[in-house]
Length: 155
Image (cartoon, rainbow, N blue to C red; front, side, top):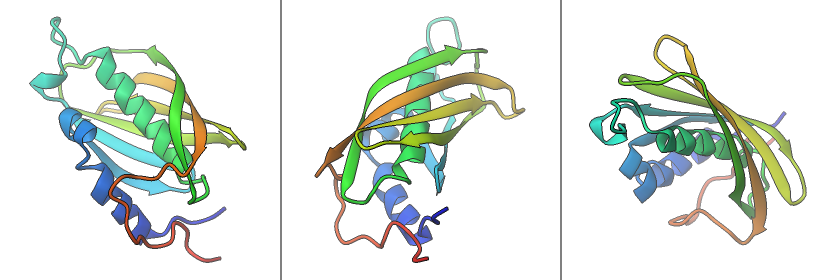
């Protein structure tokens, strides 16, 4: 198992967390490890649908991002990814507090990858689970990326 360079994680967080979509939804990428990611949202009024619970699209965005970043840790540095399919099971509503998503890489292939994520509330109640299929793309890089540290700690 390879180890992700902590300096690389900080560089990714420095570009990803302030990106426009993460800012819009107040998503924070809190941790990356080999085949794992953690993201959080502190629920705000902007996340609510008319019935006073978090909108399903917020859950979908958080699940997709958590699965994506978990898989990304295992993808060669010269490749990028984009999601091609997302499947979600909504299991419980949420009306406030913190949502935490734990992502896990399931498989990294030559052209397609599969990741999964689960969202829990502050008490550990499972709120949603999903899988995300991603397509690998040559030359697609994180915007704003300049000279970054190596993705992996040398073995």
